[in-house]
Length: 185
Image 1: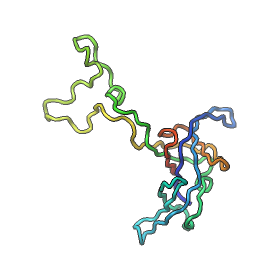
Image 2 (image 1 turned 120 degrees about the horizontal axis):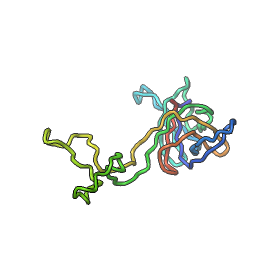
Image 3 (image 1 turned 135 degrees about the vertical axis):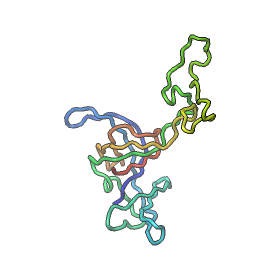
Image 4 (image 1 turned 90 degrees about the vertical axis):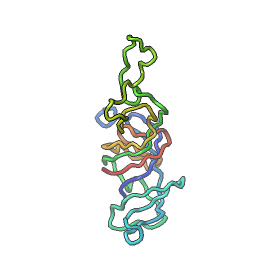
């Protein structure tokens, strides 16, 4: 049908499988999506299915079937994925505000002895005399988090059709109630 689904992150928990092994899972709310538009090669130069959530958020996925779904029909999570499928989860990561180089990049502190009592968490020298500038990509303090992150090779552990819940093994980026795009690997 389509190559992915749009969900909302609800919470993390652990579930025991049939062997008695405890597995960490992320619970995602996967309410049915409504087909709002069909993208065609003639009109839009690419083929895709545009879907709308119950909160008027739009998303596009590739159509994996030979036929296109009808407009204004509902697409449910069990028609796209099945238990055991390997998927990727893409979402905006949690924001951590402004962070220094120790928290952001894992730098070590400088020695306290030697008279530098107020510079122990500073990055130190940021460049040489040649080329006479700070090189692009230098690890510096700045905004940490709040960027699009993708986690691959997650497995679908369980699909709860009645409550519209999807259980995915492992951690999914983002805060609670953030939108998570699940795609097949």
